[in-house]
Length: 151
Image 1: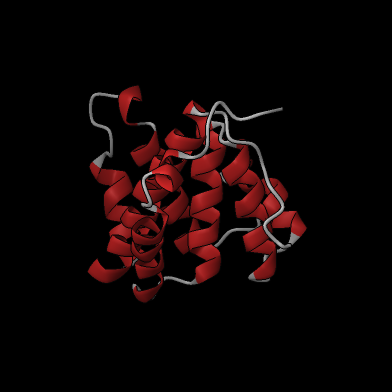
Image 2: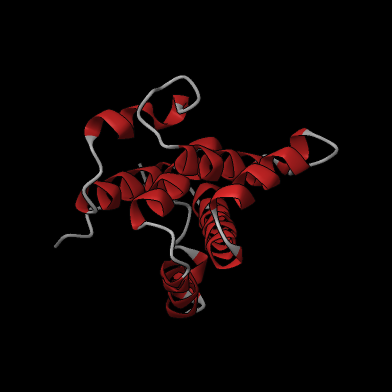
C-alpha cells in the first residue's frame, strides 16, 4: 500500500506547529490516557488507519490496557470506562460526526462533559478532537499508511 503523496503537513513544514498545538492539550489537566482514548475513537470514526495505529501504540505506552483499547469502539456497552472517560468519548463522537444531526453537539453531551471537566479540561478535549480530525482528514485524503516510527 502506498500513500498518494507525502503528508501535506510535512510538505508545507507544518508538522512542528501542529505538534505544538497537540502538545498544548496536555496542559489542560485531563489524563493523557483519556486524551489517548479520545484520539483513538475519533480516528476510528474517521477510518484513519495511520492514526488508529499510532494512537493505539501511544495509548499502550501510556499504560492503556489491551482490554480497554479493544473495547473503545463499543465504549457505551463496555464496563471498562469511567464516567469522565465516557463523557469525553461522547463529546469526541458528537464533535467528529457533526454532519449527522442538526445540533452537532447536543447540550446534553456538552453538559455531561462539563459536569466532569472544567473549562481548561474541556478546551484540552475539544482541541484534541479538532487536531485529531485534522490529521485524520490529511491522512485519509492522501491514503497515508501506518508506519513504524520507533526506528
